[in-house]
Image: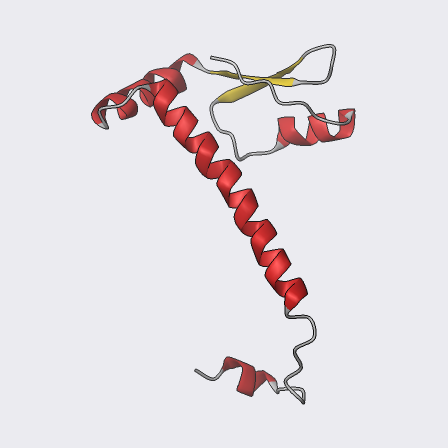
Length: 103
């Protein structure tokens, strides 16, 4: 299984390669600076066992993960939009640290 995702520079490719969020994967790079994630044999075997236990396939589980991953980016965008809409709101004064921490 491989996943190719375009990146913009060698710097971001190196950052992706050294990032620890993707365990059990080896990042390879094509001529077009597109990382290809190649899972190790042990992580593939473990992933298949987990998918089988969930009565799913690894492809279905991966597609679901991609859907959730892209949806979370939309959530951040909607949060940013809401914060822009509420920019005009003013509490009228500064609050102390103790007041901010009160429940």
